[in-house]
Image (cartoon, rainbow, N blue to C red):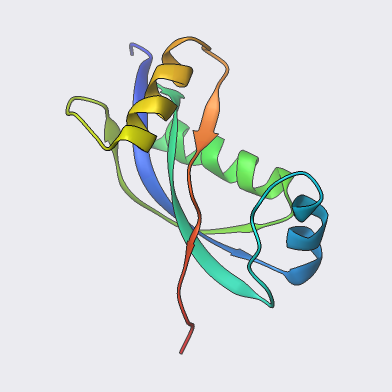
Length: 107
C-alpha cells in the first residue's frame, strides 16, 4: 500500500498531572480529568496504521485514546489551521501533528 497523508479526529482522555506538565511548555490549559478532541495529520498506509500512530502519540503524553473518527487520506481543502498542519506533515515523513484541543463537559 502507498503511504499518504491521513487526517482524522481523535478523542482523548487526560488527567490534571499530564496537563500541568504540558503547560510548562505549551498553552493547553484544561483542568481536572477531561475529555477532548483534536484533528491529527500523519503519514499512513491505512486506517489501522493511522490509528496505531495516534495511539502511540497520545500514550507518549500519558493520555488515553478513546476514539478515532473520520480518518481518511487527504483529498479536500480544510481550514487555515489544518492546511498549516498538512503542509508541515508533507515536509516531514515522520510527522504526526495535532491541532487545537477542544473540550466539552462530561455528563
